[in-house]
Image 1: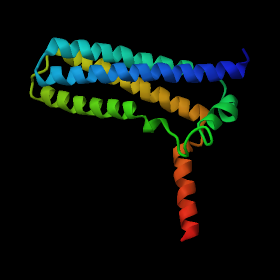
Image 2 (image 1 turned 45 degrees about the vertical axis):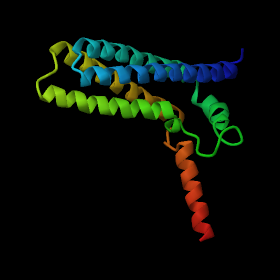
Image 3 (image 1 turned 90 degrees about the horizontal axis):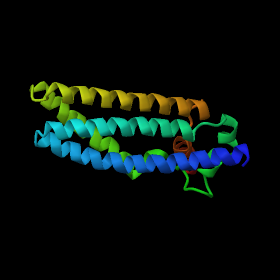
Length: 173
């Protein structure tokens, strides 16, 4: 298989694996929130540990998916995410499972912090939570690295779509 074919395969497989991670994370986040609400500390600690593994897996998957040159991204991958292959302004941020995961994690984190401030959280659960937040931070840093590698000027397809739409609307006014 050509280098370009390998890049396309990695990109697609990596994103499919990430989708599986999101599904598992969303299920665990629901379980974790229930455990927190009911003060089931062992269940919450176990959920935090599993979520940490999934976050690290998502980071590794991202690294795998993006392990090819920026020229291949610009020439092959990025155009495949634009019309006519995708709707204008396509963005991974529009992924509903990703939105759910972020929302659920934010809600869980707020609830956890409130319980921790109230002195209800056992040390082992606090330690597991800290490891989860660290895994999330590593994931975000790596995503920024991938974005800067492939789109150093930071112009996402979504921001480009909004810019073009706004310019078009202004010229029609």
